Length: 288
Image (cartoon, rainbow, N blue to C red; front, top):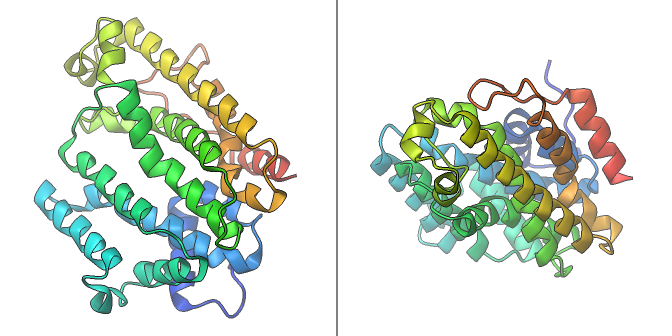
């Protein structure tokens, strides 16, 4: 049986489609959205469904060129070149409604698309600064846009908070995904400069030969995530209560990082899981 919808009874079919995608593909953001006002949830689900669609292009494309074509379709749809035919896509239709209703800027959506192009070609991330940029364009941007929705289209002035919070959340997620990425021959974190500082190369890490130096490099990444977490929380200290649901996923970062510091943690084999009940309690507590 399908779970009850979190949307108002008069929500469109497009909005309900987006909610299903988010509930199935990004459970944490779906749960976080339950703490937002009912009238804002359709727009939030549209943002998160769009992010899922763009992130999944690499998995669905048989080759990079196919993925490029799909990403270009989204660019054309968002810049108005193909809006007529694009309205048949329920995620785009819901996103357009959100953009129009809350006067959202289009540039961040296009930047998110551009950031995902590198995923198609498995381009290595060279520096910590590049890594923070990637996290900002794929994660911080969602918190920033969500805060605009919750502020009813007005700028709540939380760009700095979104920047740090999004990077912390994305870093934790990338480290959690390390076993899957390496199994596919991919390496997004740690960046090349961090590996080099510990005497490692991308090839050694991907081939499973990271050993203790890899653990040290990942510890550096956890320290970086905690620094952004601290700075993000400080920037949120005076944020209006109504905006906070945009940042609720941040509450899950400490538990994820702690799980990666257990003695039995193996970055190649350990699938870090935080029980669902703990995730829900963390979100509930943060919301209060």
